[in-house]
Length: 113
Image (cartoon, rainbow, N blue to C red; front, top):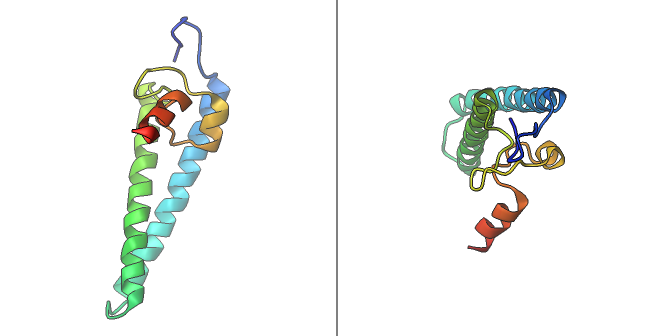
């Protein structure tokens, strides 16, 4: 990936670090989802726990989808680029928020809308 000046935005080492972090999160979330699914199969669905379980299943499924999309963007070479303005998202932001799809300016603009 290069920025608008034609220079690399993220180094190979940074990309590898981010890929590893994303993959570890995906593996952890997948294990969690499998555990929730097993719990759902053993539940009668007759109490409040069932509702909490459904919410947890939905959240885990959404997280897995977002992580998979981030890994797909990494493979496609678009990861770390703002989905709105195509500016490079700093490595420090991606380390903290690896699913970030917007630069700070566009994120603030989206939140204000």
